[in-house]
Length: 592
Image (cartoon, rainbow, N blue to C red; front, top):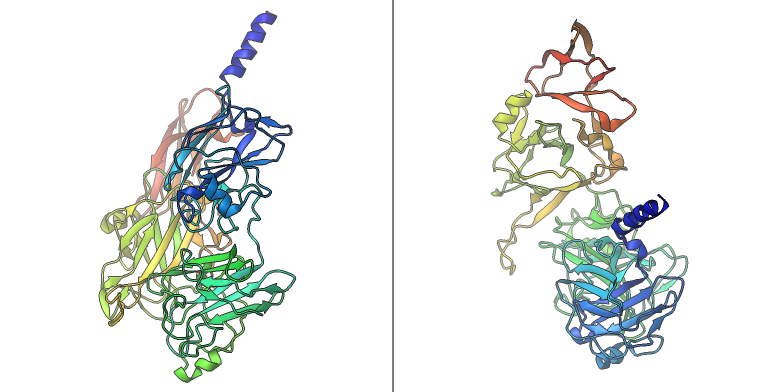
């Protein structure tokens, strides 16, 4: 019997799934698409164990081909680098402080993604993971001057969120990367301007000490980082702002477009297509050192800036008003340009909200129910869902679902509309929606039950001649909501028949604290014994509301509830009398 028990234990251990917990050797950095070409590729390994690890005979068998020579050991916490072309690597990075494996690997790392496999000298798999250049994978590592750096080498190597673009320009082979610097951040960007405004970039010093920006670079293109060379002697005191302006037609070296040409190395931002702003430090002169900060942003309306929300730390969103340090805005006459340039920065305003907002989201309805998105006009005037000067350019919903509004439609002040996945007539009839409520549809795709993003856009006026992009129609992001079926988002909206409901339509949309659930009170259910094997449940159904009748013999376990019947919504509501068969055992019933 002892032998049988031992065999069973061994069998259980043998059949148990192998997990990443046993991984000792991991990849900590990867330069798969380096500047200058594939000769500068490298793979960095790290020993996660508490003892030295013998790499003798270990081989990369997929992605690239390389075998470690006999006697190669890696101390606990130590790193070793395998490169593609040794001479190119040492020319760029040197060899001081870097444990560089002998020789070079053959093949090359794919610029679009690949699977790397490392096996021991005995053939046991040491690691296997797949990287990519698309989706949620860090984009700057794809040929823009960063390596791909693992945040937690002991974590899931296949998870793009466990990777980041290196802060170090060209990466940090042989040593741990410094990670996010959290010193100077790009806090506000003004990209769509006419006098008395001009493009501007506001920086903020998060540190408790002065930061010397002498000879740093600011650019609107990660692929061409060396554009505006910050003048020597530019120092930002702790917790203060620094604003750089175009200084158009001044010839001043303190402006990033001082001649007004807008051509390299000078620049202006592309407000129609969206753009980016990047900040890089140097080791002195022109040698790039760190990617200090970078922000990307979409199309912008005239005179409206992008700023971080929350201030200094959050993503960039359109701001309610300019906060560059003066009261000058797009309504001022052109002669106020000099006054505008006097702004030295200020804390950001709240995000711009409206005139239309996403007010209600039904993303996970009950069985036989339907998704929908509700929009609300918070303006005091009617809002056209199209450009009055170009009526075929209309508002649209994008990302999780796609829908383009037809032209010549307005939403009255304070009114709501619904966008639905079915035909508007069918949805109105099914749920008894009043005729005064506009319904649009059907939209394509669907709202994800596990979380998704909804974006609402409006069209801006088309680019006019002689602009090289004449005729192009910019689309401005009006609202964005990225919901989840988990905290801090209200979990009660996940499949219970309740929708997400905005608490305050005038506040920022993409904040889970500004959402609750739209819940009808549960029905009051009466129960009548019809005979020995049947009871009748009676309740009044609300108009347009579906219900599920469930039973269980154990109320302590949520997983034991079984669906007995699904009741479709009715237009006017009704009194429901539902016979339910019962057994001799104790039984619990509920309606939800």
